[in-house]
Every structure is written in structure tokens, then in C-alpha cells.
Length: 146
Image (tube, rainbow, N blue to C red; front, side):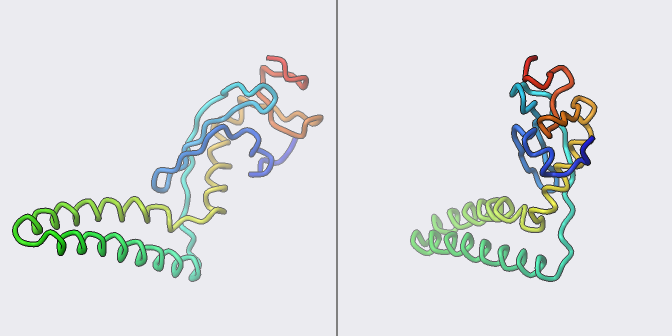
């Protein structure tokens, strides 16, 4: 049997969706394409200095750009309408900034580790096929029949 690694399960990934620190993975059988299950893994932030600096720079750039646009819109309109638009723009800018920077603390290695952890929840639905050198659904044989 193969040791579970990101490379060994990559063919089984049908879809990956990231929400904050969680990675939601839809799994498939690479032999048949049949959906097998869904599971969730948690990413951990990369604690290295370079990653923290990179995340900080990304947050700052996104924040300056988004809030700059909000300031520009409020200055163009001006007066009471400008203040109303400014308040709305700043609220929207805060939401956009949060979404734009939500994943900056997580590296690709952290994402892959979370996917491997998520696979453990559905691993019993798969069997290692030495001929294919892949995990296939338990109900599929090596020829890809269901």
C-alpha cells in the first residue's frame, strides 16, 4: 500500500474550496470519475518570518488599494451625499479587504497538508491499486469498471 501524500491523492481530488482556515474537498475515483465523498481539513498558518512578512505586505497593499478607491469615490461626490457614499464605501471596502486577505496566512504547503488530512476521513472508501499506482474507489476494479 502507498503512503498517503498529496501527490498520491491528487488524482482523487474533484474540487477544493477554501473558507478561511478550512479546506473542503470533494473526492472522486480516478478510474471511473465517480464522486466518492466530501471531507474537510484545517490549514495551519505558516509561522516563518518570511511568510508573516509576505502576508503583512499583501494585507497592506490590498487595504491601501481598497480604501483608496473608497476615498476617491467620496471625494468625487462630496457633500452629504459624499459622506453617505463614503460610509457605505468604507463598509464595503472592509468586507472586500477581509475577503481579499483571508488566505494570506496560509501557504500552498499548508493547503496540501490540510487536503491530506481531509483524505483520512474518506480513505476507507478507497483502496490502493498497485497497477495504477492510485487510490481507486472500493467498488471500482483496476479496469475502471464500477
